[in-house]
Length: 452
Image (cartoon, rainbow, N blue to C red; front, side, top):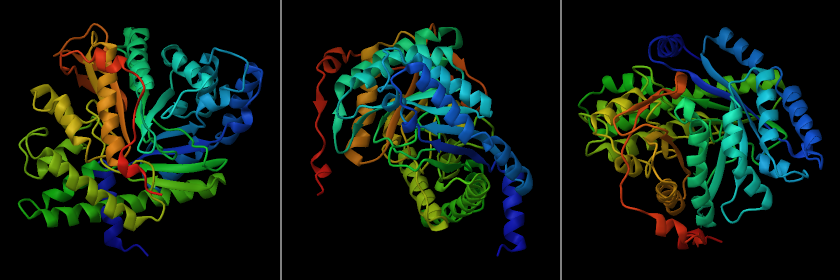
């Protein structure tokens, strides 16, 4: 039973502290859409999505109105398309992306994820065709997101795929040059990708999932920031306890929405992803949480330690609130989507190297970072390899969503609008990694992966 104080506290979080449910995501299996005729397969995909998710937006908006809880995005995640399109007699996978785009628009959702391939140990012919289609697919669609998993703790890192993804990111940026390389904002390269992630651009519906499932991603950096103001100057154990209690409240709200959506749609409830997902709005920033702990600016010495505390406390509080925590669940640090990160990057205090260090202790990885448009494919591949190594060795999910902004140089900015925000163009190291990337092959899995 909720008491009156708890209710008023939650209402205050929503009204003044940017608390929201970032996304209600329906996962849909498309394995039964396989067909040798690509046109028939695309029609099956369209029909399956529109039939399964035709009430998703309506139900989410009803829940939002009835409970007074903002639900920012409604999304769909599907089976990695390389697994579905591989059954079709075609080398062109762009029509599959168009089918996803049409279906997503017909249901009214904000994004659909799953134009994806899993190549951490090797690449099938279908995987290769999907990766080749990514630049065109992301250029000719509006709400389709793509992801490629190039490594894992068990398999190591597929460096042939890493090299190819550097080239693919570069080609995607050029194909969407009229929009500052916007296609790259819808493309993620993973190590240890998870099957139940509700957040874009990396969401897909794993083969171990049910036919359909509802996953919810909560947010709340503003709530945590506000809570820490009440314990200014107090020891870190007090800080950690405060974050845990706040994360508990945020996750409870997410579970309420997830169970309501599951019941009303007749779709099983999957997980709550309790990540702190920031926005460009003032007061909704992970960077400002770190600064509230005593740092003058995010990116200075002490930032990694502060972020480690934050991430751990969020997980501990969230796990107490729900028995179905999954996805990525941590603190996101996307540069363009976080007002404090944007300010720190503009000032030069937050660098690519410091962001890489921070990803060792938080959720996901190098996210929504703009770099000069003339950054080489080899450099992009090397950045991916570095981040994948962190994920592989630490047995965690890491990712790279990087935008080489065509025609832009260090000091310029790119503007994507909405939740994707804006980002200052950050410098990369100038030393060449070409010979390193050209070696190809596979970086072996670490010894501690042998756990059986």
